[in-house]
Amino acid sequence: MAAFTTFTEEALERYLVMFGKGELKACTPVTGGIENSNYFVTLDSGSGDVEYVLTIIEQFGFDEAPFFNKVVSHLFHQGLPVAAPHSTLDGMSSTIFCGKPTFLQPRLEGSHLVTVNEDHCFQIGGFLGGAHRALSSLKSTRENPYHLGWMQSTLSSVSNRLSDPERTLLTTLLGEYKRIEALELPTGLIHGDLFKDNALFTDQGELKGVIDFYHACHDILIQDIAIAINDWCQTSSGTINEAFRVSLIAGYEEIRPLEKEETQALVPLQRTSAARFALTRFLSGDPPLKPPAEMLRLASSLTV
Image (cartoon, rainbow, N blue to C red):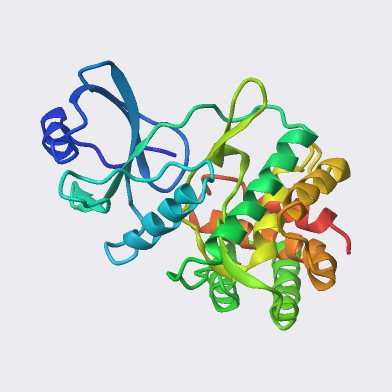
């Protein structure tokens, strides 16, 4: 998370009046991240201070914002540990601030992990299984913005910044993704970006929240597992810790058992997911905000 859009205290106070949650006491920008603007906001409710997260959407328009609200609200009402946006006094949860779509959400307990263990991975797998099951009943949908055509055009647009081995690897992985799409694996709504910095755990190791659903879309369900494994189970040397990987899958399968074809396609999808994130990192700037080479090394290390 980060803070790209700035505003005056007076402007924020006028915005917060719509919610009737209390008087503004403090507002602190959240550092890190590369997409939306986020602030920790403290309000005096009259019976004590309450903390919230203010998210100003930078990369989506007003037509897409309601979808993300519906996804998180649906998961919240299904008992998943997420922060559903608050509604204004007149019932609006998708609001406008600084001319952009904005959400006010409760600040969840917990913090991002520095060190990961097998139980953390098991809980993340369980969350994904629960989310996929819960979202299967949500009627709203959003097309996958990172489809094969996007990957092909993005590869072409950044080609001059790639070494010959990088270009060859990504071209190979795009061909692999085309073969995976042809398998017609189970699909549904996915989180799409469940990295370690999008989960909050207590000091005792309990998952208390998953955040940042702004990559949610309709996609292959095990895409979510592949993305999570690539981050949660990656070692400092850039390989996958097999015990962590097994634990994450076990947590998922406690809720939604995988089909044989999904299990067989998981490692290939880890490779193509790494390619997807390498491409998005190339698009984040020159130089990129996060190193694409990290994902390319991971893709190269994975064997089917």
